[in-house]
Image (cartoon, rainbow, N blue to C red; front, side, top):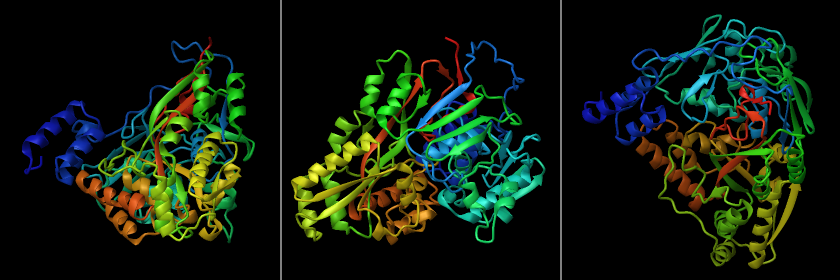
Length: 578
């Protein structure tokens, strides 16, 4: 109990032990009260364990092959077809930083733990069967199933898990900051206790470590055997091979990987966990909005998270479909090229964006205004920061001060086949035309757009504007900002696609990484967001997004999550006999 706030500490402790508050509520209230870090850590521990070592429950008894869970009227159709909007150029789960890739990975790769249901701070088993931590959140122990094997037949024991994390951290690509924030030296901080037990040791209390371990970006376990067999002198991590192949421990193994056409998986009979319902999963790449809608309405496809808002309104009237809507942590923005546009120019373009038109006419209410890159559901959000509104006269003035003349031309790149992106780009183009600025629209296939955004093409060869958006890998403002706007995250090292580099933002982000109270988190996040939005704009932040997934009416078991956006819990989904 915190001697500075005894009554508040006691009240929170009782609430934690009673189970009335979630871990997130305990963290938020403790930080708001200004309780000390040790006190908050103890309260979080009480919330998760009621006074005992926090251990995740083992999963329920696993049905034997062919056994039907009690009370389910199952269909005999065991194939599941899901639609993607574009290809997946990188299939390496420790490198790819792409939502469609992560959605695909959940069928075939596993984290040690995953988020539970719709929660962003509660967890359940994935590869690990149990886990625990000490009272001050400096040691985390995970127990593995003794029968876990990779798709290549090699055992997935504690040594394999350590080697997988070592590859992830040493390779240093894409989402590495998800775990490198907590583990800098895998040789010392990741310990193999025995064949089925692995321990992570922190250098200081890290209550967010479990949240990071449940991220679908990065901490997925790959086969060390495949790594050893395919690494070369020029590619010590076998990234080139993993970018084209899949070897995980998940419930489905790959059959066909045609990266611009389709991905086919079949059930992995040696899977260590519960036998999934579907025998076969097919992810089809369908870039055209109209075709995706048609495939859903004819029943040829069974799920799609990429239906534009206009079509969603019409599809709600179809009795053969169900539409699952949910709030998210996603913020969408238009990236601005830091090297090719000075600060005045970027401010001017922010005022030229058609905010209200985009939300009302294009997104059709599946969004709301936002004041920066942090969603209002993410820890650290600061509501006091003002929001941009369209002001073409202000835009014209700032662009003139930036040295931009009437008739100057700029380029805007977006994904082909995406009607939503196209409609927004055209509205922006029309606004700029009113003040004498030309905007050239460039459509490219989604995989090419991602390859450009997350590759090492220099900024001088990139467009002035590029459509984008992001949500955190786990519920934390630092994790939302760092990959996109820290200078260490440019190019293939993260997702800083327009090479934004501001020393003050870097300095504040480095402080935010270790912030200990909610006041400090909000203060630092607010300072960063004001710079990113107003003083030295990095992007045009235009909306916080609400999502919808369309399913055939007989699909059951789908549970959306505000962090696992556009993804599927394949292992739990099934088809009812109607």
